[in-house]
Length: 363
Image 1 (cartoon, helix red, strand yellow):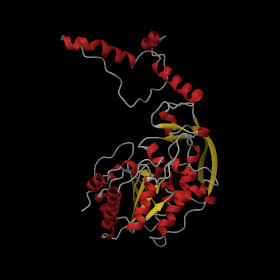
Image 2 (cartoon, rainbow, N blue to C red):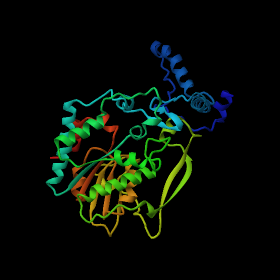
Image 3 (cartoon, rainbow, N blue to C red):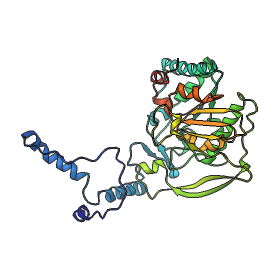
């Protein structure tokens, strides 16, 4: 069967994401060194291409997950009740409180954030830092029993306490709002690192309330009653994809459809917003609303995807740049009334504030 597949390509299973390129056919040269390396090179080449390899690996992944509840990807933790967690960026150590900030690292974050705020203030622009909690922070009860937490503060606990005691930077910590909302309905996806649409909506409401304290006449956040919610079963999320679980589904996916006459702003992509060419996968996007009064510019990550349309209801123009380091040229060109840093919790585990400050290039 493997031989037949090698000739006739019978295996139609999707390629496996192995985070590496398959081995190339070894280069044959008339030298003793090349000839000695030839058998290993041929073995590696064949090992990456033998017939039905894709199908066999996917079967192995499926059996490991369904029969033994075993994760076959080092960045995925299989929790209870169908919950998957992302373990990259030292999640396990930080969830357990085994790694903490030093005083120097906390001072570095304070210096970076104050420099950004003060740079904006000199130009009459307001600033807000929004921290999105990791899924295990809001739903620790579905983490496996063996992953116990210590009494130590997490890095996020440390950072927020330090900023509160030492600076006046405006920070929106979304943990209280999301923990309260989970009493009503689930706020994160089972098979994905991200929140669901209900969690994003709760965060959007908290964000508008925080911005309203800086921007007069911004208005109140839209009520949940302005939308028609629906539930559906959909393909598993990014963590399911890492496991190779094409058959895994995300159950009870929340969708919010605006009730008439509410119409949310259209989300448009515009790579020309960037001074340099952006990644084709994460182009700058924007919304426009002629009835809005203010301009918003946000440096953000993937969590913002779910609230862009909602925020567009409040702003004359809102621009979203998918990166954590700043770009002064874009800020000068857009002339925003407020800049929002949206940063997921796990980024604070690994970020180098000195590098961020250099990359910002603010003078």
